[in-house]
Amino acid sequence: MHNLSPRHFLTLLDLSPPELNWVINRAIALKKIRNQGELYEPFRNRVLGMIFEKSSTRTRVSFESGMAQLGGQAIFLSSRDTQLGRGEPIEDSSRVISSMVDMVMIRTFSHSQVEEFAVHSKVPVINALTDDYHPCQLLADVQTFVEHRGAIKGKTVTWVGDGNNMCHSFINASKQFGFKLNVACPDGYLPNAQLMADNTDQVQLIQDPKQAVIGSHLVVTDTWASMGQEDEKKAREAAFKDYQVNPALMDLAQPDALFMHCLPAYRGLEISNDMFNDPRSVVFDEAENRLHAQKALMEFLLLEPKV
Image 1 (tube, rainbow, N blue to C red):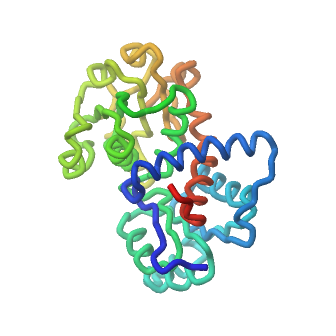
Image 2 (image 1 turned 120 degrees about the vertical axis):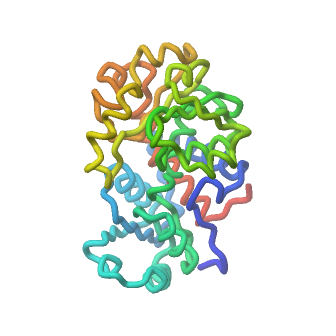
Image 3 (image 1 turned 60 degrees about the vertical axis):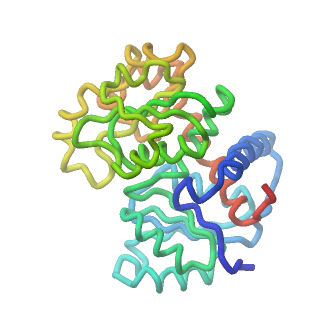
């Protein structure tokens, strides 16, 4: 059954704070169900179409496994082997694909492409990363924090590095989950100015990472050169040289602060070798939680629980 107007998840702002908290708590519950070896298959006969225009490890494995574990199926569509890559209008692709599947997940470059796809889709559309936002990663990050430290509301988070799609999603998360966010980015690599201006209540720019992490409960970073920016690698390494997260920087945060990174991580660049394996690092829990958080998100979008 296709709803007249499906719910989409293109940014964290598409769900209300109570709905987001439902997803986080549900993710924790679904993780238990899986770890206990219980079968839970509400998605029998349901199909997820996965459109990838950017490469992926965690996103593909987590969505495909999640769909299988919930009793459904996932179809992998890359732009290399569909008409999307040959320039079929997004509107046409959306109408056709959404008439055959129950949900669509898209990982692409331009955020406007995901928005346009959603406008014409008969089924829920999930943003699995665009150049502007990566909301699914934030669900996993918040779940990980909650599991290790309890509620993130009222806590202080520091973003260190590039003002990229992950940074933008952390800005949205600070609003939706109610935490303070310090952003430490060098000149030339700041997050979207409008997004910063819209969130001055809970977000502040503190360009010196040492200052920014003081009092933080969570410190987060990402690669300095994202997909498609490989040609800027040298310039970026120079600009970000003081922005490495290492144990000395973490020592300035709260004693029980956690460290997260959405991976892939480049040891010796944005993160030091010893930080990756530091007891404060929860990067592998965070990576696994992509599976559980996205299962909860798909359940929310397809089964529409009362929240």
